Length: 289
Image (cartoon, rainbow, N blue to C red; front, side):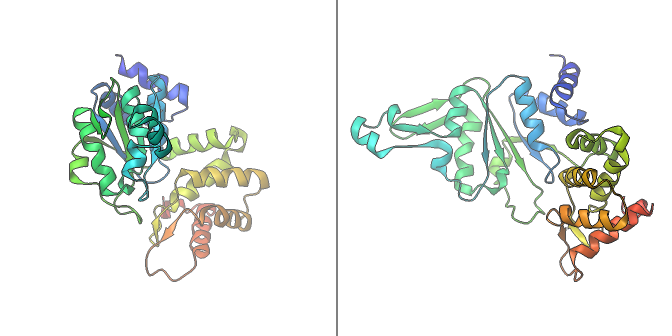
């Protein structure tokens, strides 16, 4: 296939800004039939890219969200006791889970935050990914249809609340790493998602710079994703004011839930955000950008 053409069409059809290299790797991985894990911070577009590639190839897309409560039976499926009593251990008494459905239908099983799955649930994936086989007690063996693929995401291991995927499971994936995008690409995304026109570009620029600065501030462990910039741009566009007091107030409102301070930082998060806003509005953006 013409990969260059496919990348261009995905970008245009699904509104993907940039990400040429990542899209190329995703397409190559899919064409080779390799299971793919995408690693990156919150809000860099991991889900968006996976969904866009699946939609472009007109392939089924079944999503699950990693969680320590997501058990083996939820992933594979379970028997309904009343139906078992009535009909016995047959397919009509079985409620298939997302893994079973994806294998039977040749779909992409998308696992968001796979490194939050418990070890037992992770282990269920191994034979399905290795040999395309899933053994269902009482029912027999499921063989994966053509096109079955596991695409998973994970946040960096440094993030609070993440666990480590087993070495056995990681070995079954090819790896794509996503970082935050360049300023111009993030600005394009903010304008696209916020609906702010070029006549109000200063609002989009200000919101984008403030969000990006939170990732460089020495007292912030985890800075804002581009979602913070989009939220801030939308609100600033409503108030139509870029004075220090207003921008600081709106930035605290939108970003305080999206960033984490380093351990040991004693001053409140409001002061840290205000410092960033003051630097951006005064033109001292190189301090954090």
